[in-house]
Length: 235
Ligand code: RET
Image 1 (tube, rainbow, N blue to C red):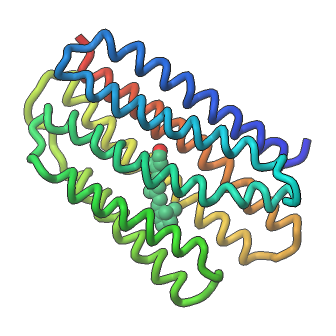
Image 2: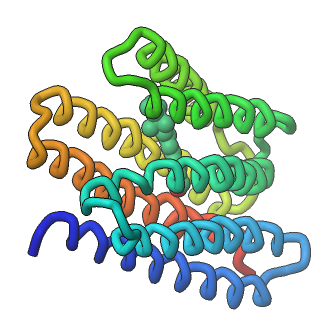
Image 3: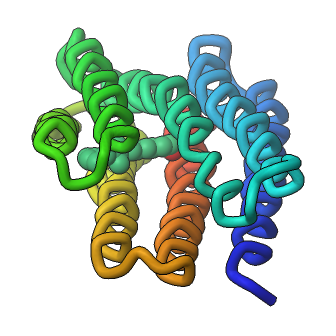
């Protein structure tokens, strides 16, 4: 089996995971107290949005006129659109649980702002010509915004709430700090591989490896994150 087919199969796995996650969060939502339902709503919105985008990604290889690797490459804007919508929702989901643990109000808005800067400049870095100054400036801005998020989240200390709430906040912090790290690592892996050679085989390896890394990262950071958030508010 070639790498493109494997990538395609993993897009399908991504779709199924997101769809199953959505169903799970919707079913769990009815078990929660009214004031906690919003947590399940955010979690379900994130996986529902991602399911739609993953479905779209599974369709690309059959696009007429695209060679296989170009098709996988063409999923990049879809992925950024997904991140643009889902990462603010994930931060809001974190904000709800963190506020139950006594986190100061208002910090989520600054996080969301930094997050939008991270995704938008990251996208401009991605579409710019590789190796140009503008490109590195965009990636640098994106990285600064990401470091701001990591720094802010890491410094949130749960001070009140149940043991379960406190534990969930600590776990969700680790998702944002370590789980989100997989994305820049995926992008850097692709960039380095592409700098190492411009033959068709290297490009295919670079594009597919990055796409595969993002699928695993997405399932962890969207479905896994939601499961931990719900654990905090379960009756
Ligand atoms: C980019 C560009 C290079 C620099 C950095 C990046 C960070 C991306 C992140 C994405 C997170 C996505 C999530 C998706 C949903 O589950 C844009 C790759 C720092 C952190 C959490």
